Amino acid sequence: MNDRPNILVFFTDQQRWDTLGLNGYTAGLTPHLDRLARQGTFFKQAVTPQPVCGPCRSCLQTGQYATTTGVWKNGPGLKPDAPKLAELFKGAGYRTSYFGKWHLSEGTGNGPVPRENRGGYEDWLGANCVELVSGPYSSVLWNEEDEEVHLPGYRVDAQTDAMIRYLQERADEPEDARPFLCFHSYLEPHHQNTDNSYPAPEGMEDVYRSAPLPPDLQKLGGSSAEDWAGYCGMIKRLDEALGRTMDVLTSTGLEKNTVVVFISDHGCHFCTRNSEFKRSPHESSIRIPFAIWGGAWDGGGERNEAVSLVDLMPSLLDTAGIEIPEAVQGRSLLPLTRNCKENWPVGCLIQFGDAGLSPGRAVRTQRWKYAVTASNAFKGQGDASEYEETHLYDLKTDPYEVKNIIDSEAHAPVKAELKKLLLELMETRAQEAPVRILDAPVKRYGQRTIEYPCGI
Image (cartoon, rainbow, N blue to C red; front, side):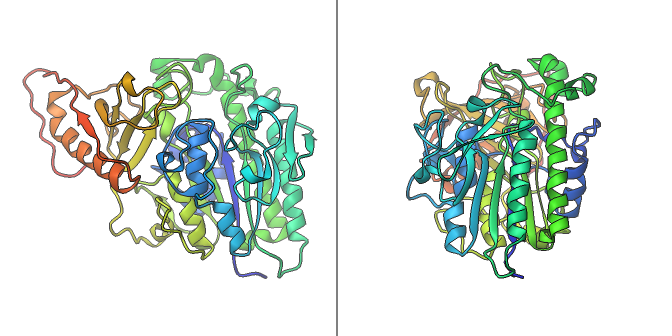
């Protein structure tokens, strides 16, 4: 058997962190993921570096921030000279494959993704925007020869069936065959863009009519009253697909030498923070489920360090023993499984905004969320030279961010610390040019002064 591990990435779209049983949700949506994450390494505080489909996928495939990849909004494709996950694995002797939603090909419309826009993946069964070319029971993808493929069944099941066939083919190969990197990208539980619905498998939406709403949705509402049951049904079917996938790895013997990743690109706030479902710095938008198991990742436990989706690409390279290019801005998470966290950052950088919106930046630590937003003068741009403080949340006392305290005079000391940290992360991690951050106007609530010990 090849001693280099196979790697399988199970990638969902727009899945909130608090839909996991591991994170306290009681509706039982993710029993397979909960069990497998406990076996491996679970990154409880993980966030996305950019809560929009295309930009965060560029971060995932390159290990760079969206301002570096150039994909700071939906639409652009990956730069030819960017470090690409599939190309690096292929260069190291891996077979690379991609299933499902890509969203990183510029100007392809509703047809197949051109080979040169596929990020170096060899085996291919995908589409640039799955939500625009197929429905929940009419899955359409294109293979590596640009042939249109119609898959039968509910879309999650249809894609899972295709991946299972692929895994069986890999299991039937000689023991000295190339190891594989298989990336499986589901649309679900993202909404169906053609009608803004959350179409669960038939009958499953009814099962979750009384599923409890998270506290932010209870208070702020948005579209959650009409969308939450379907959203839950989609997540339940995804977890069943994960269970089926792991059964195949077990029955074929591939499990013994396969590392599996579960991750989502961003969350979903159901129109509570703006007029749609993400693109904001709030936990419901930026915090994601993230777990890795198998091989060196087993027994890593629950980690609470500052971890981002941008760190997955270098982590996978490290797992396979492939050198991480200097241009990669994320860092390998593998040392955390051995409690090696020297000089680990206390916070994660988040870049938010998109076409038609002003750019913003945020830093998230275990306790605090601090965000700044540019004025309308920078609307529709990827970055800005000047921002203003717009958000501050104490995640310890207000984990669902229902009270913005950015204007609190009592919190001036912690804001000053977080501003310094944010500027440092922008410059050192994402290589952004130095910027100016304007203080938010403050209000004095009563006469009480709050003292904050050092540390954030």
